[in-house]
Length: 231
Image 1 (tube, one colour):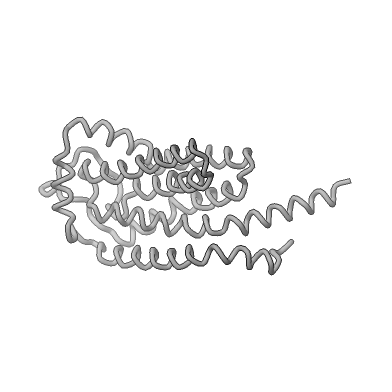
Image 2: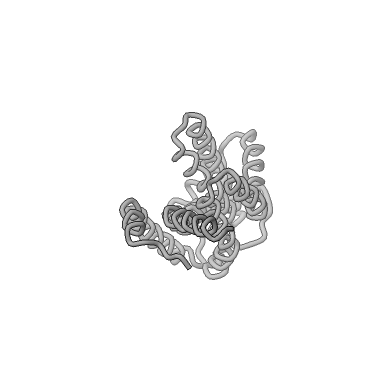
């Protein structure tokens, strides 16, 4: 195996220290919120936020249903697989492998956290439930899955710097924001479930994003070795 050189590791480390610090902070916040949410009802401002969001006009429900369809874990895994292939065949192979790794981990991490925290869904007497559900409340699976996929693609689009890609990043950001509100609006999550979904998604995404230079370097060296060994 062709290991990364000292120079490449040093180059890799310089811009990634901030991401590493951010990841540790996000991990601490995710764990702390999970502890507070364990088998808990509404926390802090949950009820007030739910009351405010569920007071939105009835026409908002169509958008909430649509965005939740796009962020269901099963749909995210399928669309994510398509995104991985698209990234690979357009030359963004480090990003493709990073996204693939996160998508593989996503359903297992999500299910494990839900089982451990075991938070009940909002009580129907406190929040009007406009749709059904099939798992525990914390973290919001739709928010966690949506943030993993669309958040990762948002980072790629924003990094591209081209105007059209920045517009795409803004659209993805709007989808993520709508998704956060939609899950509270539909009465199936508290706002702290949504926050937990975002935090745990970032716990998965940030290491993968930070590792791209290292992955890219290893892929480049592997490609060079293949060319040297070919007749």
